[in-house]
Image 1 (cartoon, rainbow, N blue to C red):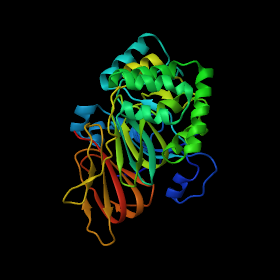
Image 2 (cartoon, one colour):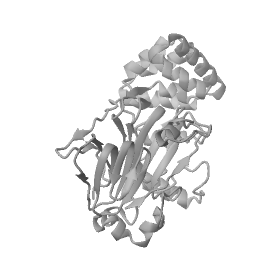
Image 3 (cartoon, rainbow, N blue to C red):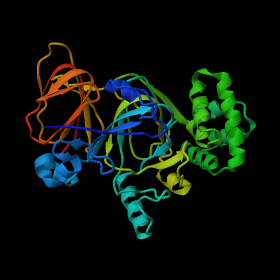
Image 4 (cartoon, rainbow, N blue to C red):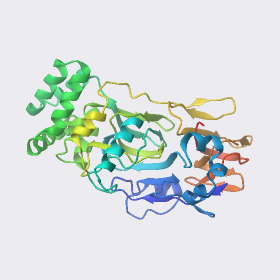
Length: 383
């Protein structure tokens, strides 16, 4: 079992206080957006034996287990994060596995450097993800029913939004959502900027359920993603609730602190709320144009006290143990690799005492007992 030292990424949208508060350290004044736990080559966790990437590369079957290596290859197939959003993240969507493979191979054939700003596919993997709230957490997830989206846009009483309202009423669901998103992202930038400014002023004036869009526009003035965001479901998670984001589902995180887990990929297609590259034709090929319920997940408790967040993929499995004072020791020994993350209280994992924000990597098959009083998230795979 290896105690992890983890990198904090200072993305501009990060909160300046949430991660320092969790770790019990003084804020630096700089944004601290994500703390990465795992073996991603961009920022692998560090152990006493060296970077976790090198530890796994040296003996994949010993560290990951033969079954996990046979199913996912000689790499840790997930990345665990603490995510702290102080401002809205980009509106984005992720490809499915086949789309990722085809897109990656195409860009490789065309000789586009993997670090090029206009490259869409950094690898050949899909990127399903799960976010579990540690604080109240706001996000956007999946399309609203077109009639509901039309009502929202119409209520702003902005003349330049009326063609979108008409489109949303006039077509079947898939065609309506596709045509409106295409029109928003393809509009003349100056005209769209004026539309966003007027829509933001209306949201500011109306307040209440409109307030999130006014806040988005405050951070991204004139961005067409502000109007695209109004096509999506707004979700407010309470601590312990989660969202699963599958392929093709447009989404954005707005604010709050959470535990995020994802397949180990960097493939992101952006719809807006970003100065980065937006490839509209490729985005429209990937997006699933269907209205959907956001599907807030609540953990299902098992007899041994483990609370599992059920998802339809195998690259990761997230669960948590909430350990009250004086509770029994929990045996978490598994044939698959694990990362254990404490988010509250004080717990002991093997020989390691963990406080909030501290974590360990547990090799496959290693005896693992957890005790103490606190909350432990357990990240592993289904092999």
